[in-house]
Length: 303
Image (cartoon, rainbow, N blue to C red):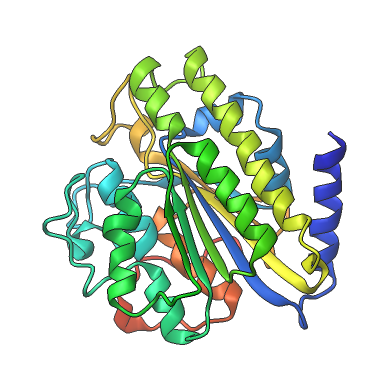
């Protein structure tokens, strides 16, 4: 508990200093298949700290707007595409976990937009589910979003991803880091997407500790007092039974957390936006303008 209390104090003090002379950074953590009720019921002390130090919604949406051209299946391909491109299926074109019809040339990974506005930006992506880097991130590379200093990594398992992120934050100074953790979704498919399923609940607790490791790595940076970090967490979908992909409340209803940085402290938003809000939220924190021509669906969340 001492570590978590230290984080509350240090992150809040850094933000209260005004941040005018601080360099802006963002850590975006995508937690695959984490249902809202599990976040609320399972012991998640690290994420609880982030919630207390920011804005949260437990009523955000995956799956687009029902009955419109934006409605999409609550699968990982469409979900991560929307989180990372800021648009729904009618624009990004990803209808399932195949990417044959993706229109990332028109609607690329938001890293391409960050680099468009800040050519010197240092961008990093560490994921367990390989298609995020192999397919979605490739759109950012095609749009000149990556440079030799950037980090892209697909690792074997959440523990390896977490270790890679912690090492990266200790050694480098990235402007934006994206992380995806997958084991909660894996256990949901095995045991059920429910906080009542012991395997699923245990996976939630483990991922919470990994989130804590990454946040601790930020606070431990020797330059932390000169930095202004925003931490954003969300998920690509929920689950119903051992499946997801349809439009039940259990599959559609998700959370978004925006913490530290320029996030409003102690606020709960109801209802919330779609998870398409992630890119504009990061851009606003970084002080980068969003162009209307990009066609993004949401306003920034929680700032």
